[in-house]
Length: 360
Image (cartoon, rainbow, N blue to C red; front, side, top):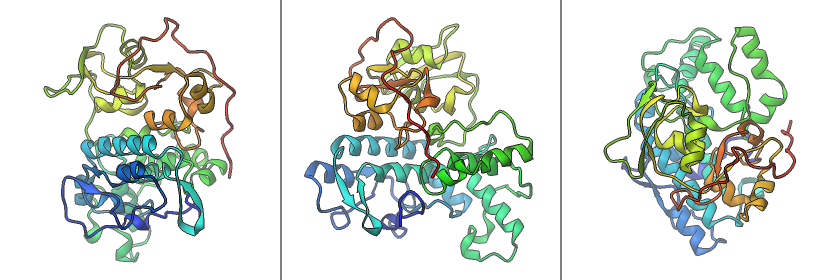
């Protein structure tokens, strides 16, 4: 069974774990035995998430109360750090996955985050799209097995009967932009384009980006932002004419980390025009140019491709979404490290040729 076509996270189905603020994804018993001590240590580290998070599976429905408990900014940030640490400690290591497939260890936290972020998608009102999908499934088949829908029909305030509900569109878009599970089939069959066309939805083209992987909050974003009093980094006051890219470039922080550090919407939508921001994950940066590839960027900056992906979790596993990140800033050193001022040119030189998006 391929990890890229069907859910295969049974190893993480620890639904009986106590509800604590810090949980372990792996134990000394379940951690792969053929890896280095450093890699094992990274896998065994705790994440600040609810105990249900490791058991979240693409395609399953969950009660609204469970999602509210699981889908938090602390958890999203902790999972990002977990992926970063594993990518650094396990860069060249593999394990024998399900179906006797040899897979890179680094794909483990990426799949974990994929399931988490798909499950935690919200609409503009902060309602969970997983609940919307469950409500619509129940509407289509009122006799559906109770095991396939949230216990007691716990959909929050959602009652979805419209096949063009924005949450159903967002769910499909998230999957079409991913290289995992049904993503390549949805992409190659133009199912998403057909759906948006029939529903009259505009302004939501496929970008094959995993930017939504950072949207783990149900709160709305206003046109201003204020850094929290306990900002763990440096506060920056938004200036007239600033946008997410100019701040990323001048302050030395990847565009994605700027957004996630400040609980802002993916893709710089509704970026604040006033207030202050908290800059935590600063780094040496590189601005993506047309025709760049992950391997080319890594080689040009004397880092490994694994490091590039680890420091920039918005890059998907196959680097298929890099062409949608042109003009975005990436980290070419570990986030949270010393910032190195880039050259005065706004965009870096293209490092290589672009990779094609797979169709199967």
